[in-house]
Length: 154
Image (cartoon, rainbow, N blue to C red; front, side, top):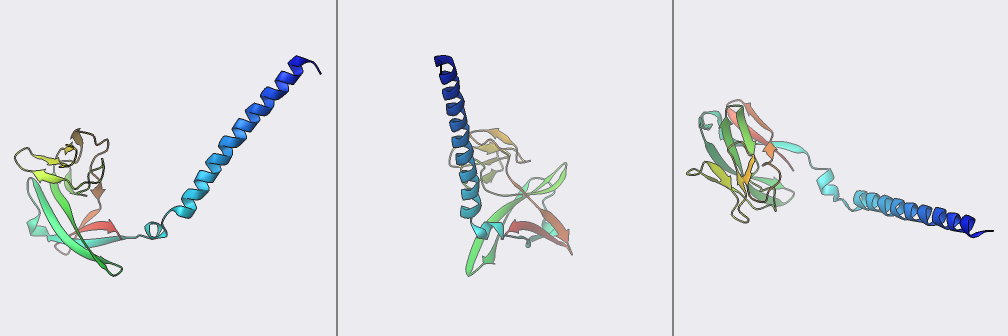
């Protein structure tokens, strides 16, 4: 066998070995995700909670609502922001999309502010400044029998 055939065979072997290695790593990562992903998160369902009455909907601006619900044997206290915009009524999660800190509404600046790393969001939840790359999460909202309900996965 001459050197050119031998080097071609080596290249072919090394190329296939590298492809096989990365395929194996990818498959292993995918399988690990499915087995390690918490089953409680998979089974969470969307439930709607009463946060305020229809006559308390802000005509302009933002209204913070605090409420609690039971999850298993724990009571979870949480908040949402109800906002009336030109597009209609929106409910926002208070969780900053950067690192999960809780944002607050600043009436003077007319924006949501994250106290941790300076993230800023406008009234419609869009990023204005700071490290967050994604807007605030919108929550499902509905009005039934004079009550404003916000959906949360529990």
